Length: 216
Image 1 (tube, rainbow, N blue to C red):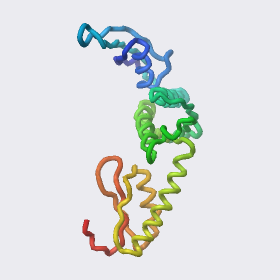
Image 2 (cartoon, one colour; image 1 turned 45 degrees about the vertical axis):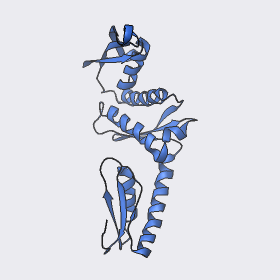
Image 3 (cartoon, rainbow, N blue to C red; image 1 turned 60 degrees about the vertical axis):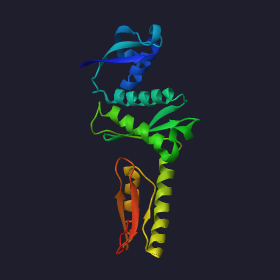
Image 4 (tube, helix red, strand yellow; image 1 turned 180 degrees about the vertical axis):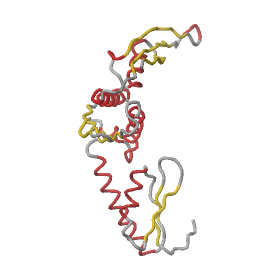
């Protein structure tokens, strides 16, 4: 099925690049039907260019879909003014795992992995165009594994402190996967309970002693 969308940019090239990035396609996958100058500002300064893009939304080719996701992530990194190569390291019917190799990995990962999580979230939205059941996992410099080990170790140390003081502790905000790590890691502590608090994607986990009088 052929779809049509409009994109803008400071010039035609930028508008086309915006379309490629947003759609997760290559340049040869789109047809630019129309270019229109958008006048704005005093004496028409600061105008933009609008293009109308025709593209095929047939995602039945799984390999092509994987490549589109990879290209989308590389384009996103480029838009961040960073250099990076994206490699597919694992693929099955329900999951595709990609690794970002970059000298700017610290920036790509971000504080507590929030930038990496953002890239992963956007990539999952793009992936649903081809497969509603496909989950995209993005890593860089083996950050996910190191982060998981760190969270589990810290949760267990905190649980021991809670057991000793009988006072609850509230951990820093974490994404859903990280919170599940804490809940699972402490499920074997018979005298410890964990609950999630807050709203939105990044909630906090409270670790408390069973039987504690809750005054929070």
